[in-house]
Image (cartoon, rainbow, N blue to C red; front, top):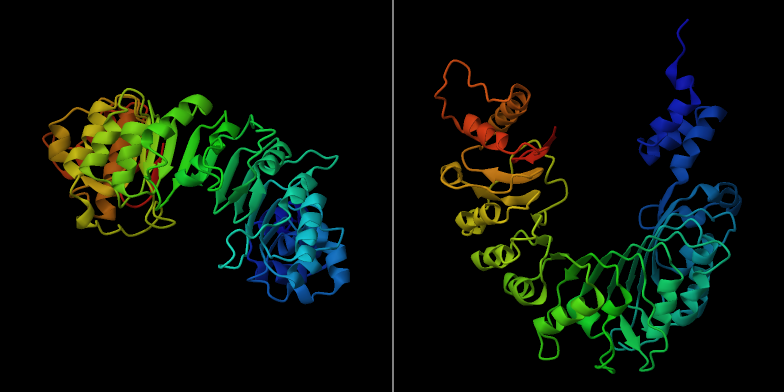
Length: 450
């Protein structure tokens, strides 16, 4: 007699990973064996904005299952933090909390972080503050080092917002997180003129912060070193919008000098700043960039020309996505004609940047007539995500992709009986065939990987 697959515990555990919370709760009530396999899914992610009744649970239930909690989201008030004081809540991997200006609340948050220090890999920490008190100081000098325990911190991503720190405390924070690879900070207040120890973190490769926050961390100490001094291994800077830049106190040349001195490995920028600011950065603040990602709304002829100034080294040119799931949809998104002005110039990027391996310009449409008249020199292209004029239905895209995939196998595009086929599908397939290493393509619906 064949065995029911749902009687296999390993399979139930696998299924549990893909069930909703409500379905997991229902499955956990089937029998004891199912309870054992589905309970972990029920307890894995606690979002206090969604699970509003969690704080009302019997403390005994939390003591019994607290070790199963892996992610905590939106921890914002005393009632939330009190329920997590149970010692069994000690295997968190992700923690998102909002600190209140309350010493008791802060102490409890410190205890949660300290208790989970060896398992946490992601922390998102922000602070609520009185709008009229922008210099409100929190006891973070004690908070940051308190994460150091006998177990080494496993934290790889840290987001902090609104904290007040001395530079020494900031160095202590970095030193206490040796595995840290990505750091984001916003609306920070750095105080203290004395700089006894500017710790340089050997592993942080990605930074999320505004130019003003990084270059002028303290308004009271304008001559203090920039925060870039802490990141000698930095490779990518995600530059958040800063309405105060450019200013008289921070020029593009200042940025260039600081990067050259402290972050020689920094060769990629991602920014959603207005086009004119991005042009300034590309032309005057950065040298020999390998990667650029800009807002999909901010591509202009001037920006294209600024990208081309890095043509000898540029490998990746991308825009942000208009919304989540943009690369996986059944219907083609409408082309925004108001954004198509620089289209004819966009083709200058693959023509002149011969080292490109990826072009992701999802909101822009190229014309195959113009493509046929030019020569894309990026022979090592591996990923292409762009729209093509007249390839305007899902059926046409599917056909072009099928012809390209089939052509890769046969080493030529089969046009059937009509060898002079000039359909848009055939033209696109022939165009894609020019790139031997091309393995990922998006033309308007979903990503095709070969």
